[in-house]
Length: 153
Image (cartoon, rainbow, N blue to C red; front, side):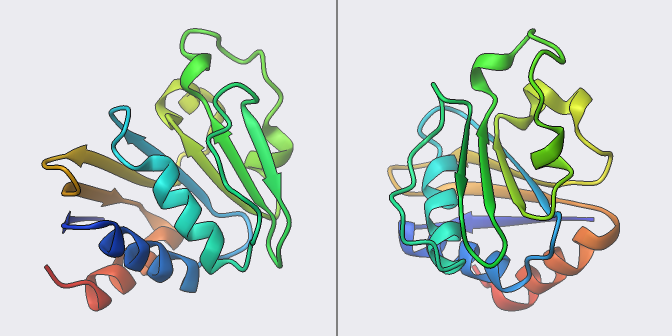
């Protein structure tokens, strides 16, 4: 299942993150992709805010993984530097854990991921505007339906 949205502002990004936060479940995996500056970390900041996390959220580019505590822990992975590395990193306890796993540049470690994840692709179309494609199967279809029901362009 797939949906496409037009994001016109950071407020729209916040609203999308709120919808997703309202539909989180234990063990959810969210894969983010898009050019540098497309809003992957901004989206994650808003998602964390709606999860009740008050820590400052920043990209884990150099650390690879940051963990934030809340009702469901947030595991924030940035796989940008892992392209062509393979299976050298042990993320299994986070990817297959009970928390919410957000992976920026997920395509670089897709061999480590289960078949079913929520994929969010961000494409810059203007200063604040983004084209967003959201894909998922199985238990992720309910999230896409919730987004379709609550988000209007």
